[in-house]
Length: 87
Image 1: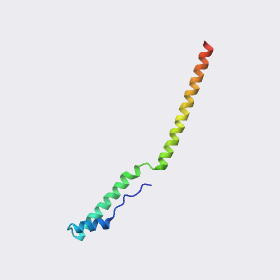
Image 2: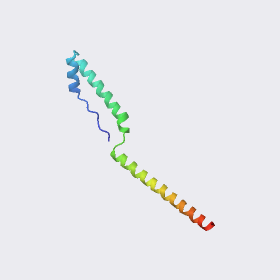
Image 3: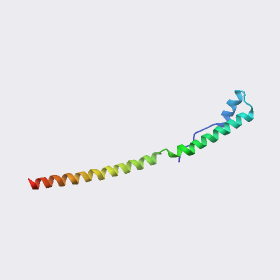
Image 4: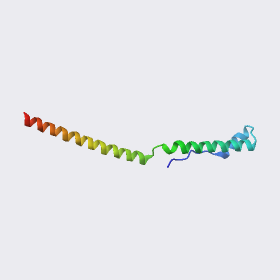
């Protein structure tokens, strides 16, 4: 599960109010920005890999590499044994 991007709407409204915006304007902007961040989180943060995803990938890669190495060893030993018999 993706972590949420922290956004303090109260502090944001206070900042806008101190810059001269009305209470309604500041709250509307805070609401719009909060919704935009929420949309960003849904669209992008859920696609990020977490530690469990990385562990699973590491295990799959180790398994795949082990199988490939084993296959190469079998082919190499078979090739050497065949060459020994022929020579």
